[in-house]
Length: 326
Ligand SMILES: [Zn+2]
Image 1 (cartoon, protein in one colour):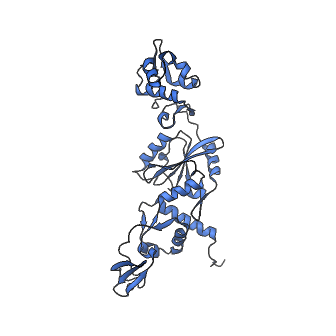
Image 2 (tube, rainbow, N blue to C red):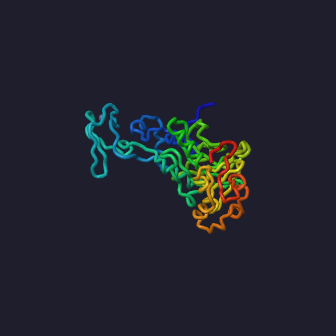
Image 3 (cartoon, rainbow, N blue to C red):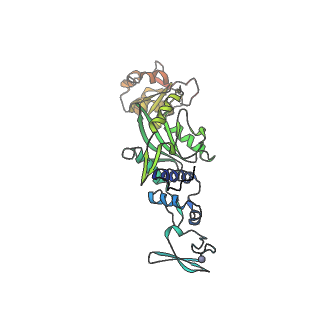
């Protein structure tokens, strides 16, 4: 079959550009030298990314720019006057330069995070938050088949310096089986994930459009996740402070403010008995109303699982048999 010299379709061009963009988001170095772009053989791809708003000029001027006319000499001097950059070449003299010939190109990762947040329909409801600077962001929560999932965007998920920090954050802010980490990292290190969190490649769920992303197929990815998920059997209070949640055999129990404070006091005591007078003070209630069974009236499972008491009005946290941190 003869080679087709047709121009790529808009769709194909977007796909190529998006693939290149994912690589740039993932690359450690933030800026591309204008000559690297010019001699990449992919100027059209970069131009497209600039038109879409995914790439923009960085700060300052790049050093060591080759003369765009002769390509043989570095420009000795670059001036800017009346809205025009000019450079001096020892062979060609003063030459006019476009912005993308003198400034580095840069992916604004914060902008990519905003696009993703908007594309997922989260932007109006959640303010995205960086959990690991420049590496991991929490975008908000999505409901999928009656299950709430926290959605993250992450990159550099194989960098030895980032992996422990990412793992720690995901563990701290999200219950097992509830995290979705959208990423540009190919073959991301699975140890960044706490139990049951899932990785979704950005390229698998997003398409590039002018000024943003369109998100597709995320539901399909989450459906796969649901059937592949191993049930968690974790029982712990490790989400007590980040989410006011107790985990019992993997199930999340959202706690009332009063129960949360009660458990916090016991937790602070590190397993030592706490008298109800102390608890009553902390909860700002009368001592005779400080009775575990009453306070945990709507959290009986939580009470049975985590709290022990004696007849003298002391309460303490039970040790959890499987050794998960309380
Ligand atoms: Zn020249």
